[in-house]
Amino acid sequence: MNAVPTADQMKPTPGWTVAVVACAAQFMVVLDTTIVNVALPSMRADLDLTSAGQQWVINAYLLTFAGFLMLGGRAADLFGRRRVFTAGLVLFTLAGLLGGLATNGPLLIGARTLQGLGAAFLAPAPLALINSYYQDVRIRTRAIAAWGATATAAGSCGILLGGVLTDGPGWRWVMFVNVPIGVALVAVALRSLPVSPGEGRGRPLDVPGAVLVTAALACASYALSGMEAHSWATPRTGGVLALACVLLVAFVMVEARGEQPLMPLRIFRNRSLVLGNLAALAIGAVTTSVMFFITLYLQHVLGYTPMEAGLAMLPLTVAIAVASLLARRLVQAMGPRLPLVLGWLLTAGGLLWQSRFTAEGTFVTDVLGPGILLGLGLGTTVLPMTIAATSGVPAQDAGLASAMMNTARQMGGGLGLAALNALAGAVMGAAAVTTAVTTRGYAAALVGAAGFSLAAGALALFMPKPRPAASAPAA
Image (cartoon, rainbow, N blue to C red; front, top):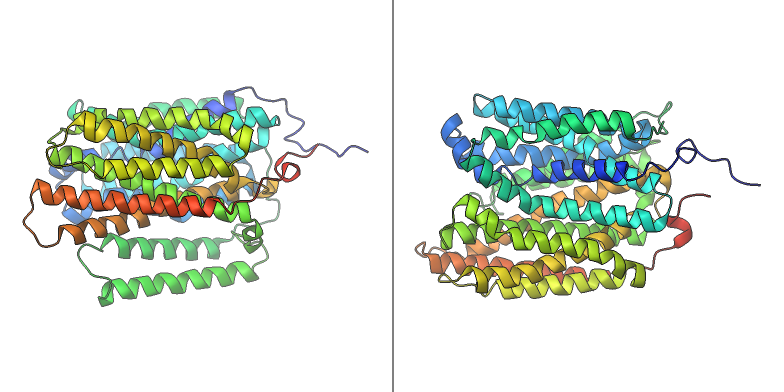
């Protein structure tokens, strides 16, 4: 006897509308992690921000985003993906409008906090929608490849777009840019996305777990953000890190004993998911650090303007997008493990080549060539990482798996950048600040990122082959 189809399975396949909406939403979310960077000096001058306030314009978004991602993913599973996706999109869009209208630093930081909260409920749904509504494995793989290319390329596009908008109409348009896109996506989502009722009847969200894990991530990130001013051995840093550990242990205890945990510990029995999330940590660390240090090299050493630096990053962006799409054929032919190893080897090679730049470097020899190789490597890792992190996950946990992967990327970016920035500072030491000394520090950070890549490639060798029966939707 045939199994009774679910409400989602009785819906006709919604063409490419779901994939287009998912890619556009993911582009908005990732774009806002980088687009603000080049606008910070203008924001500081216009709103009289302090140095700490300038930093929290970025941190408020990232901390809220990472801390509430798992709650957003669980909410999507329990209450319906279209409903949660639309609510997150509305909040994200309104927060962008409020940020553009901000008249002082606290208002801008508050708007960025709301935007991070909206992103946390918006980001898990697109991948879950793709996995749920594309029944054909080949079509689903193409949609995931496009989603991965969009997510990865949006980071460096943010650098370019931020420079163009800041040098043109002004920094407020860095916040306004997502408003018309968000309004259009809300209209399309309400009209075209299939309805999924969710599993949430009588099942409350795990609020204590969400509060504990958010507080733990916030404490850890707060300690890391103050690394340059306070050493690891000071009571301030050590105390905050100890508090983060206590909160994390409390979170694990709550999840182990709760009837409806936010993050069921059973999900960690899936070896592919665990290794996929470790790969996501590494991708976040390497991608964030690459964008940070290469952009600084272009501006502080080679003297590029923000707009010129953004244009110089375009070859890297294009290479990432192209490789993300081509990786589909590699995954179909060999599975996710070998393409992931290949991607990490190419990434390590590009980083080591890039680390050879000098204070008298040129764009063609020190940026273009290694940037293309690096982009090909990073782009190749995205699709196999995504498949590994969501492989064999039951349908009711699809949003949770997506949220875990996004959280891993965000936290990997913060932790990796902090570690590599400390490495760069140690190499620079107390010497006089010159372009040669600065270049040596940046080069050391890129060598460290290459080490992360090689370690991630070694871990990928232990990835199991995907089980078709587990990853395919029910008949």
